[in-house]
Amino acid sequence: MAVGVLAGSADIGFGDVLRAVAGQVGIGSGVDASTAYIVVDLRLPRVVEGAVIGAGLALCGSVLQSLTGNVLADPYILGLASGASVGATAVITLGVSVAGLAGTASVTAAAFLGAVVALLLVFAIATTRSGALLPSRLILAGVAVAQAGSALSAILILRADVGAADRVMRWTLGSLAGARWSTMPVILVVVGVVAVGVLASSRTLDAFAFGERSAMSLGVNVAATRWALYGTVSICTAVMVAHSGIIGFVGLVVPHAARMIVGPMHARLLPIVVLAGALLLVWSDVIARTVVDQQELPVGLVTAVIGVPAFVWLLRRRGGDT
Figure (cartoon, one colour):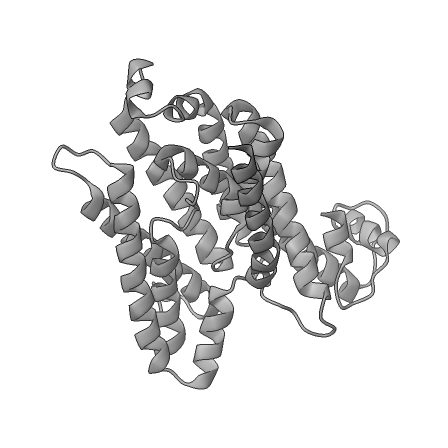
């Protein structure tokens, strides 16, 4: 995170960074206004948000892989990404507003609403007559809603001008450029509360690793637990997607890598997942900001470039072990 604050097109030394941060809390004389703005108002919130969102995506991916028993599960498996994309695309291409908001705030609100609507559709389709949420039905419902959302977004993009289509593409590839202190409390509170709740459910998640019947025999209320955890991690994912766009592979690759390090027991696994997810996204954002001179890449491209070969390697290691 310290390196992330140092990295950027403006050449600011470590000493100036320390003085800028110290000056904001009343220690020392600080630095000039422009340096303080770059460090405190642009880079620092971006690094903090990257760490929080990376941790949240990895945590949500780990929970969904355990609940569904699907090694390919990630935070977007329930169609949230497509729903958020529809909401953001509608605002960008049609120029509509949400709750009287404008600009980035309207896009964020629309993306969150779209993700929530997609989640409700998935739950409505997947719920059995007895009120149970079966993993297989849930995944299939997520795929169906995701395809419908992708088609609707494509229709909106085809009707839009080139400039709007370009903004949609950049949003869907993910970015932390819009991170500001004013929006940070929402992300911190949501991810923090979800992290505490999931860590407290470590034993329950361990029970699901042996199947639904085993979990029931251990006294787990399977239906209630699934509803609670699916809903919790889905809302958390919707909040993160609304703020940063769609950042792939963090929630898919990190849990698998962490299991290779500490094993499947969630009391040990989840803290490593949180730290590794934060580490991956912070460093990916540093690369996105610095690898091309005078140009910033979408962070989702960087996580994909890192994530694809990493996932292939993990699959080969897993196949060799079995």
